[in-house]
Image (cartoon, rainbow, N blue to C red):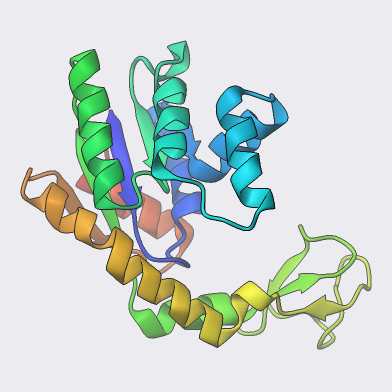
Length: 216
């Protein structure tokens, strides 16, 4: 299957993408991984991306599109893929259509993870990270540490990242509504969108997604 995963920040796209890709035996292709791989491998696209990032500028769409095109052309993606974070705007969605036309393939579905805005803010703004190890993550409501502000694993100080503050989350949601949400209507016109609730346990959301994709 060839799937695009969309949803606001905090919808759990990364988590669901990993489970779905495993269940469907297709590679999970995320924009974050694309950038990291291209930069670490020193590819031409990675070098260009790094120049923009070092200058504090947004990486142009054509670089992201080029990275995605190269990744989708790799042998493990021949039988399908799950795209997470790409396309993020209409220009990228149109470019993806062009790439698929070139290869004589098409998308099977666009899976839209739906989460109320207040829940997104609650999920992200409640996160706390350990200063000693960023993989130690807690949540004030869903996964609190035993002692407030102290990591259960190593005793390090827990803090709220700048990106996780409520005002920052609301700005990220605004960007999502303005830039990414229009691709949902674009794909609805192609009758590709399947919308599911991303509320509840991770396993429940995965089950809903597999049912919606007709792979339960």
